[in-house]
Length: 168
Image (cartoon, rainbow, N blue to C red; front, side):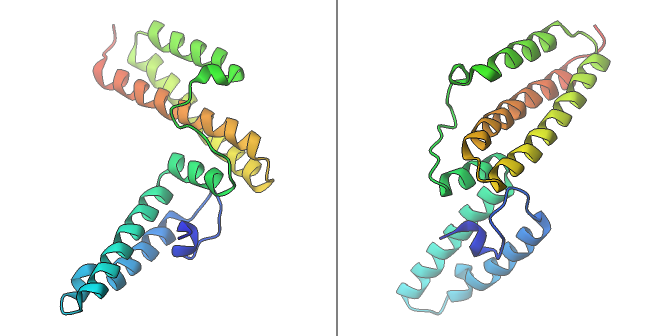
């Protein structure tokens, strides 16, 4: 099952999430096991398997990081989502600098600025990933995937700091 084809979408990192949801709900109505209560056991089993597949496809495509991973996987690029950043030396300096900046920041205002910068970086990485993927530069897309993965983690850390800190 090609997840994009399942929902009538073109293979791309940038997708219409509203169209994805609309197609998902339509598929759910069509294949949900509740629609097959009076069917034979084989038909019920196929409907259940189809629903499980639809749910997995939807969950994958609605997540930026999972969608990027899936796109690269479709192209034969095998990545380890937990791969160590040491394997990407071009990212290591950025990682250290950003984490140090976050650890040395004390006020909510400063943390909010870091959050805004991280959000802008993430948006740029996503745009660049899409460009690299569309250009079939899968090595470049792989590096950007790692940047997106890292940036999402740092944004989560910044959010935790924002929620737990006042002006110190």
